[in-house]
Image (cartoon, rainbow, N blue to C red; front, side, top):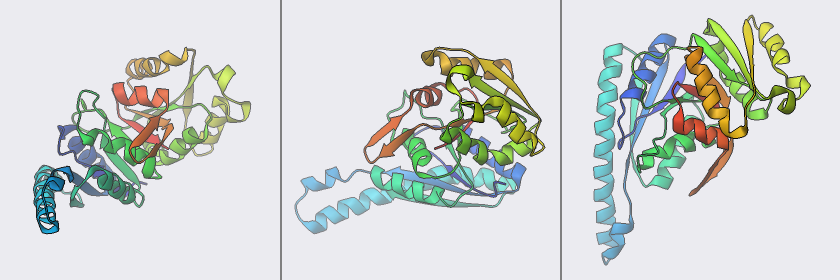
Amino acid sequence: MYKDILVHIPTERPMRSVIDGSISLAAGLNAHIDAVAVGYFATSAAYVMEGGAAVAAVIEMERERAMERAEAALAVFRSEASNAGISHACHPLGAIPAEAAGSLGEMARLRDLSIVIQPDAEQGSFDNEIPREILFQAGGPVLFLPYTFRGTFKAKRIGICWDGSRVAARALRDAAAFLARAEEIAIITINEADTIPGEVSASHLARHLGRRGLSTRAISLSAARADIQPIILSLAADENLDLLVMGGYGHSRLQERFLGGVTRAMLQAMTIPTLMSH
């Protein structure tokens, strides 16, 4: 069960979707939620000044301004969380981007679930990079909320995007708390006969989940690789799914981030909440 949740509140992008989703989820689970917001600053401007004391003063001034931006973002979350009566704490950070990514990754590792907003390709903010970094660094499930999300989070109808891989299996295990409370679970496969070994087939997965008391149905589709993401989202709309569960493919290094094609396409165009694990 998700009892200890981390949510990233952006400071340079609209935050309503992640505030609505995280607070309603925490309220439904009677969970504690830690909200973290980062005010970003760059140190490059300081280096045009001469003298160590002057450099330190400029950096400290930039950090203070960054902290003010983080505090302002968290004030909105704090008000909403207090009104909802949920257990919560706020953590403002003032940091350069590389430090922020590392700090949030560390915070996520001791949480049951991390919640982030979908990156927006139209925005140049570093807030766009944080969700990916948390996915790569958390070591646990990350719930991506579309930036169009509004209202109360629910996960009554869940679609499992299954390809038999290690990361898909990790996402499946990490979604156990959602699956246990679901009213309907669909196992979605693409080109199963050609890509999924028999020992991890959809029928074997259904049998495994059945032993946990979960009833499922299989949806098997065929698609070219470039069409996988739009077909999954089209199916999610047709089936009125509340949540997708899928592996998050790729790896990350400082200043260099790689995502698998389907994962990248899903983050760019997701229309419903999606739980990913890496």
